[in-house]
Image (cartoon, rainbow, N blue to C red; front, side, top):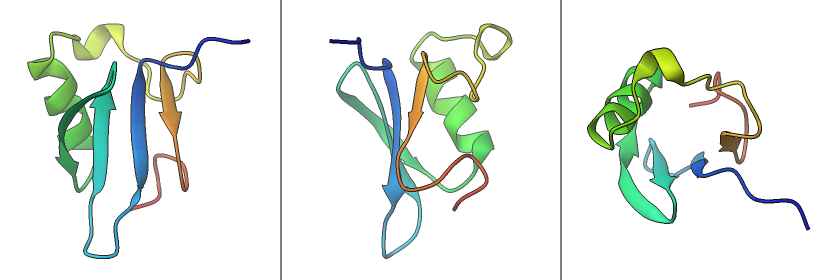
Length: 68
């Protein structure tokens, strides 16, 4: 069984925004890519080490990074 990506951006909610989790911990509700980067920075993951289009690192559910 393949390992799941440590970061998950969940489907857009009916009220707007997408929940972001890292290793099962909720980081926040993102309304755009800037929010995702900020949540991950606060979690100790530097932006220059993160590729949001890498499926081994980030799982996008309910659309890709252009879906909000």
